[in-house]
Amino acid sequence: MIKLLPFVFILITGIQNVLAQSAVTFIASGKQKHERGSYESAIKDYSRAIGLDNSNADAYYFRGNAFFDLEKFDEAISDYNNALKIKPGYRDALFNRANAWYEQGNYEKSIADFSESISIDPGNADDWFGRGNSYYKAGNYRDALNDFNNGLELNSSNPDGFYDRGNTNYQLRDFEAAVNDYTKAIALQEETFDYYFNRALAWFSLEMNDKACADLKKAQELGDTEAREYLKELCK
Image (cartoon, rainbow, N blue to C red; front, side):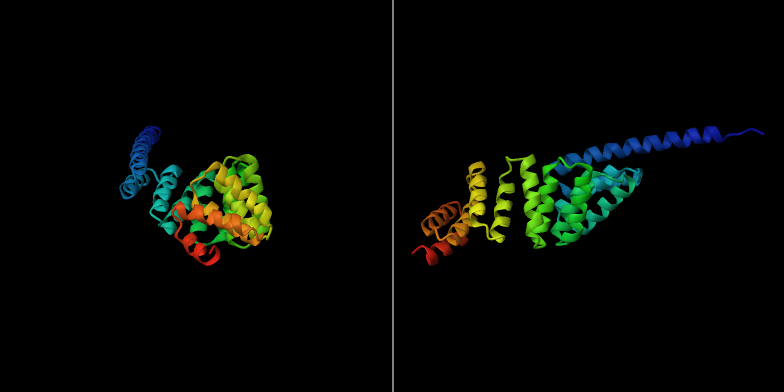
């Protein structure tokens, strides 16, 4: 009896390789469109890639990113789920799914994903900052402070890291530490009015009203409309 199976197997494998290569081409095209801000067009290309090779974790991951940028977080999470099913431990997918959960206000799931990502690569400061923000939103300020400390040990040039830690210290009523953190944030990025506004609140809590009013004035100069109202009420 003549056996044709080896030939059939080779033929099928060849077709699969061609489809997989075509999928890679659509992913590359989608990434270019995504970088230009053409998210819907990028999604179409990623979807074509998935149609050709539904075992490609990157196709789901990048389509999830496009959905994320469109603020379609349910769709983004679904794609990150698929990417992680195909490629368990896909750290970038975990990180972005954590951010999608955060945007939806699901801080428990966000914390879980950031924690898993940290377990894979504890040297990534963004994971610590991300989980810190999730703990902060959940009202767990002590754990948030610990995460911001870890993040800043890894990346001490991140002004938002100091700002977020400042907010956490403020919530913990450590106003001097909050002022120090806001000051460090300002030293790294001088033109962000939120840094001055929140430092003003910490100064007020320390009863240093002149410094607080000076910060409110600077925040107003940088375009903070809320600071203008505080100046009228508290710095007459």
